[in-house]
Image 1 (cartoon, rainbow, N blue to C red):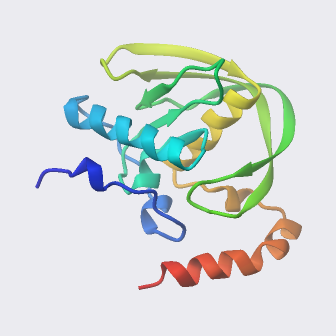
Image 2: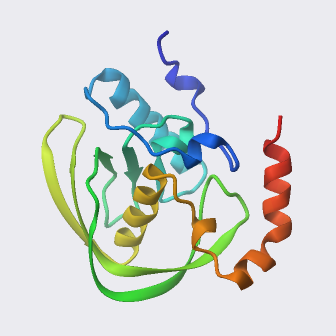
Image 3: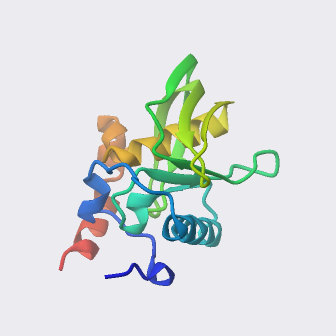
Amino acid sequence: MALDVSRLEIVQYPNPVLRTVARPIDLIDDTVRAVAARMFELMQESEGAGLAAPQVGLAWRMFVCRADDNHPERVFVNPGTPVLDGELDLRSEGCLSLPGLTVDVRRPIDATMTCRDLDGRSMTVTATGLMARIWQHEHDHLNGVLIIDKMTPIDRIANRRLLKELEAAGRP
């Protein structure tokens, strides 16, 4: 059955695909390119800075991102584990699959990633600051890791009600 890319939407916690370890994309074809384009649409409509394929219900190792006008839109297909460096920075993060939730997350300020682009070319890119944080956040999604996994006990208590509401809304 063919994938209807136009029907892709952002899935919300506790959808099980968000906890799935995504599988590599074997062939970068027109469907993969169409999914990436749809992901950019959804990300922009939601005013996000990044979106991983599991967040649209696909257990694929791919994410898209764009932080601001200084950073172009970029697609990461089959990204490797990021090489992280630099001091740790504590910043508040949100997630399009966890609407209304923000969590303070400590992450290294520098990241280098190797991946493929939509033409299948291998590339290695480096970022610092916000863009490095976005890459790390989206890469976490490819491994089934959510920002709620990085909550402190105090964050967990502060967000208990919102998490229960999201869980209740996600039950069949």
